[in-house]
Length: 72
Image 1 (tube, one colour):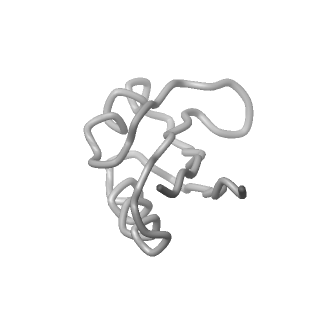
Image 2 (image 1 turned 90 degrees about the horizontal axis):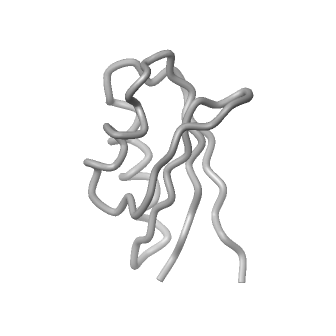
C-alpha cells in the first residue's frame, strides 16, 4: 500500500467534498494557508498516484496541486 498527501489550491468552497468523490481518496478536508484542501490517498502501486493527481487536477476550480508520498 502506498499513501500520499495531495495539497490542493482552489478558490471553490466545497473542494474538499469534491475530492472525496475521487477513487482512492480516503479522506479530504479544508485547510488554511497556501493550499485550500488536503486529500489523503491510498493506492497499491506508486505509479497510480499520477493517475489520481491527474483526476484531481481536472476537477473544476483546481488551480494547482502538490503531492507528497509517504516514505517508510
